[in-house]
Image (cartoon, rainbow, N blue to C red):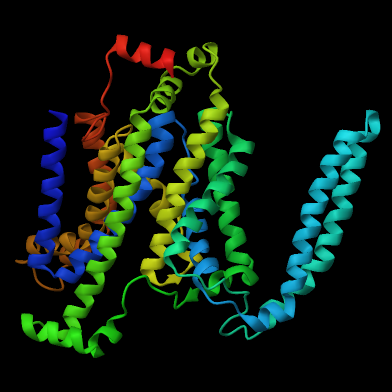
Length: 446
């Protein structure tokens, strides 16, 4: 029943995307497909944390932004003038920071008695002033170098496809730090901690212009697919367009979007395969045992906090990969676009509606919710025009209804969430529950 329902729902989703191509445009349909795929990867990462282990992470936005930052640091060429102006100072200041941390740890381990904390505090204060004495002049020099066009260090100039992996690694590293601080807290405190840390990460990205230009944005990121203008002048592509009778401009746009879609599908397929393998393994059964009864799992000798750390890092890495892919798709890094509505609330709606604990359900939720989010506004305008078609153009009722049409997406999000929670509380594709005996055996052997 569950497999048949999943096939039917995915088929309906495909019909909706084809319908957009037939009745609106194939370019729009492929654009929606791109963002559906990236949203599905984000939902998959959150499902690994919540569906596997019950970790309530509300800091999705921060890990997504770190993925976008990775795209800049990996694929953009280095700004040689900025490196000459302050690159050495940044390197020395980072070494001073690492040295301060090491010295504080050493003081904490070697100094005993009442002098332990004062000595650690003295080392930290001295290290802070040393760090700022080197860091601040270097930052000023970097940000003063051609600020209208650069004003930052740039990246290392690798192919942009590598930034997807770097985004996952960067998000995983941040998740390890966050986990050391926040894991072990109660669910509501964990949510508050992850939200606060995400805001801190975003504030750093927005204000440290030397790193990625801050709110001035980075544009012109390299692309992993051909550029439309280059295709339009390539003889082989012009001949192909002529043979199929397509306009070369329109066909080049569709060709590039299809290439993007194939790349995104390949990444989603790999992550999905790995997630399913992990879920069905003894490790996955142990994670669900910890989720369902943490105290019982701890009584059986399981390292609950350590396992939570593992799943928190894995889920955050997947979200970081999606963040890097999103920045690559847009071709620009704009820290101002990251907001909790789009990159936290909406992702959680995808997981809940699709079915937490089920990877296929989370991916379906990513497709469905993003499709509704994009199409709700034009559908709302069409509906309001239809309802008010018999009213005069200056009618106050017509004006108010048309003004309210863009807000249909928020209304539909709430309505969908309420309907699913009422009639399908475990999601459209719920988690498969093992029988009690088999579950107990799996928990014992994990």
